[in-house]
Length: 55
Image 1 (cartoon, rainbow, N blue to C red):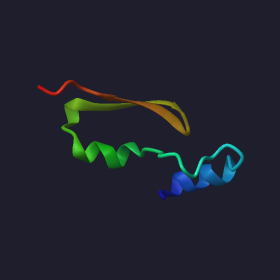
Image 2: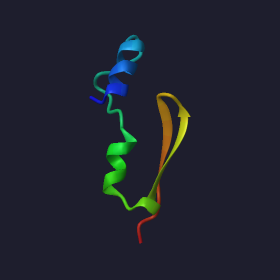
Image 3: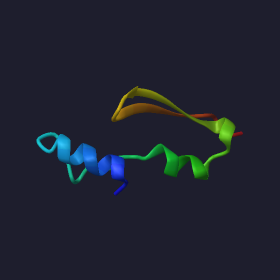
């Protein structure tokens, strides 16, 4: 678990779901061409990952 996720899981223990998959954008972007993936921050613990159309 990444350090940021760990701190969030401790701070929001009442809401954190250990069975949920929490994506880490920095890990995902390595598998996509730069122009096909982007991330928009919504809050310190949320965002939108947008994938481009593959040709």
